[in-house]
Image (cartoon, rainbow, N blue to C red; front, side):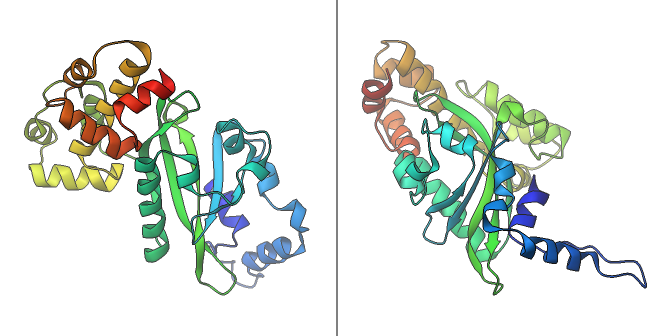
Length: 267
């Protein structure tokens, strides 16, 4: 997938021709230049049902999308999504996070791979996704935007965590977030200091252990708000928040709406 995206945006790959032979990169460039504009590689991406493809300009406007992404938003045609930003399509808390990542990629010129994050589907159900973001390079060599892919967590065989002990800690955080969790113990189980553990975790998951815990608690709260009539204060305690005020603050930060507003919209 990444190879195809790089071809679409004319990214050079570190490939050298054998001595005495023509540089294969010249064949690649000549082939791309020969294509009609309606025959570019994004046509193939419309047949990828489990992978969403996107490209945005520097202002954050979606300008290239595949059919999977269009359908993810319940739309019938790309004309309804082209030109929109994350703030038009996602809750405020999510949109701000996505924009911050986009700016980071464009400012540094470096890719962010295997970002694990929550999305809300059309029914308000939060689901885990793995996102890859790369700078989109123009013909003049400047960064003109950001491009990437989005896959559901369940469809990925790997999520980019290379350490078995760190992966075990990650899965523990995902499945035990509602109860008390000792970051110090998790770090010790990985043979790391707390500082080393948090740094390595952030390097591979693009978030801190504590932030992941909050996201998981928000996800659990969404389920209770949609599926039950449990009071907001009881939902807060059941999901591991200190109190309802703490719950409201974190929930609105991540979703851009209060727990009560979420229940009224999706419950």
